[in-house]
View 1 (spheres, rainbow, N blue to C red):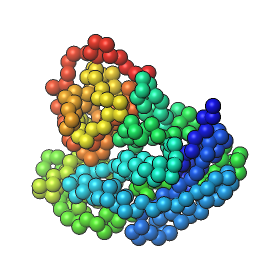
View 2: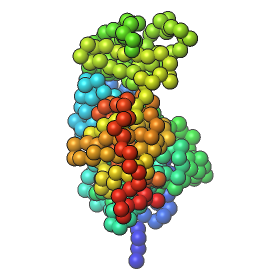
View 3: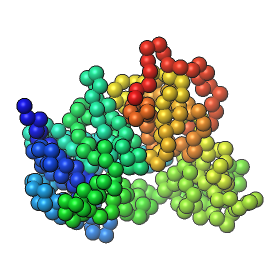
View 4: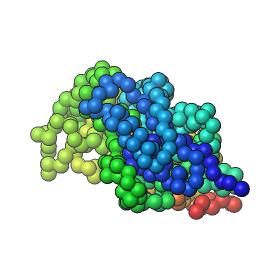
Length: 382
């Protein structure tokens, strides 16, 4: 019995999605490429590489012998992703558009379009893995820990994961580039894309100013001293060091200043001197807009690990007070610059359990749960 499937691959013109399509074709699947264009405002070659990326995607498709279609999801992106992006900045939070972009565009609008084309599944060049256990689909970390992208995929649900293939999940990035080189793909040494999902590497302050009015104000230190002026709270995030413009105001040993808080009511940016200042660390956070991939985790003591930003090790934590509205997460060790609007993503060993949007960070860990262990009959997933 044939196991060949009709798989539509999201092809960005980069090396990862190109090799994903190549590998699936070599495995005997019926493969088609889909290039997504999702941004049209100020779509110029200066910051947007979509025209060049489409050319690269078409060249790769021709090389490996598959068809590629271009589709425009700009309206969906503006409504589902960019609108939320602006709303969060307007509220003084720092959103992660890649998380929402994956959930709403790459694995919803794209998936719906692919299924309408008769696809059995979709595939992307993300570094992650999916497996089925007892009828439920789990999202796993990639084998290449330096490239693992499960953090950005935690909002996917069972229906999306059931129809998704990640061909690169078991490979190292170096292997992917070598495959591309060996198979003669012209983009084998193309640099990885960065910047805001589908928007690119524009100067951030200039870009945001086009959509939200700047509201300059004062910068105060945590001890109440006026130390400078900010250009608008939306341009700053907790833990930020660069671009504060108060280097000449250093005191004591001359440590750099870091953003520690944003006071929306008084339009004040609050800063502190020294990266290791206690005011930058939090033992607890509250999260909302939860998504648990295979059901809410049990309240086990320090069994789970969580990230409050992408480039971070899993920090031992306990999840408590889980409701439909949100949850509380306590950390065994205080975490640096926990930022409202960013995502907290929870893991159990290699398994990404899900997560939510950080609503607030709390400095006091005095109410952290004291009892250890998991409820009877539960154990960590391997």
